Image 1: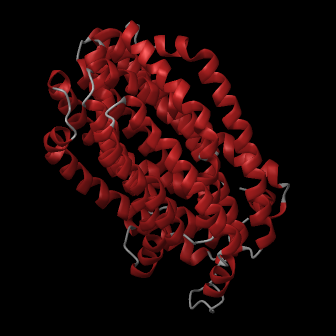
Image 2: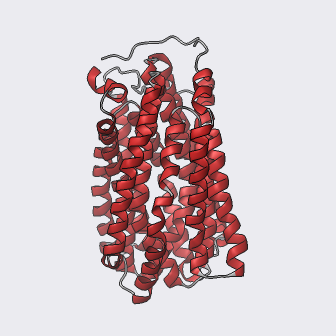
Image 3: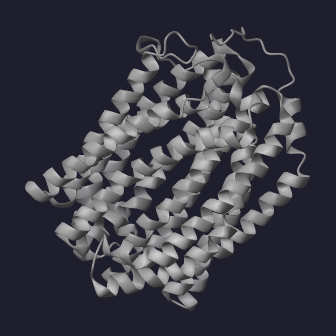
Length: 464
């Protein structure tokens, strides 16, 4: 990377820099979701709605484990972006090796845990009997690919933190193309059912992991270059990563737990509702991918500017990202409300499934605007290292209150609308809390004071 490109985040036009990060991240996460969506489309059309529902039921459990690690990866990204902005090459390099070692160990642990407790978790989720075994088959194969999944997630977090958001996109394009081809081969030609879709995803994850590791090991001597023989755990850096990443991981776990509970509530309806919820979730992911991509972009932007002590750009970056996110949300609303039915038909053509999914779209999509503050404000705060209190707000506001709704309101009025009502209610309350905290919490002064102590680390320049 050139000197101009690196300094653009801390010196360039803000909206251009955010878009420079946003689009590669968006397209990357889109294609990551795309090959999961292809799984659902092929399974739903070729195998049937029971298989489609079986794949959908597994999503919250997978997100529970992967989401926690993604929080740790985001913590790594914050630490690396701050060291990159302050040009502390020595500490940055040790952080890279600590992070990749953590990924490898976590992948082994999650594989063992995931495969072992899969039947128990699906039973606790009240998974319908006609899709239970297919869900077990899908999950157990999926967990075979947990190690490459975590290595890829951590590797892309490192690359994005130093300003490289393009190569992760190229890697996912390659993995997506492979996944589509293997889906057609395993599910249609070999008739392997949901297990075939899972194996296609696993092989694609292995490819993306190999590509991102190759990118890190061939970085031309940059401070973020990965040397496989130097993998180690630096305790102080692991503590720094955990300080920011653990709250973010906990927040993701709470999201996933609340979604598990909601999925359990959905599973108590008939298979048509479960299948419709699966289809809605695949469509809904377009919105979430867009918003989370902007959150990742503003996190990197805030982290590097905080490291460079350009604090005014942090506030300006948030304002710009909020405007961009509002436009994105409006476009998603127009897409889903205007073209929801033909999108649903891509997954399944059962009339009951289609009508139920349209009901979900009409109820939830107009409420998207109540959520956008959560990702933008928390992403900005996390970029400066202020992770704990926003996580507490989000966990209590979104996740805790959502669980209260499911446990107390749904038994009183056991309808689909009651389950869906938990979303806009919790989004609105949490957004208001984060706005108040950002405006009146003195968080930036605390973060500046926490970083003013002189560092004992050798500071090496980032090579041009």
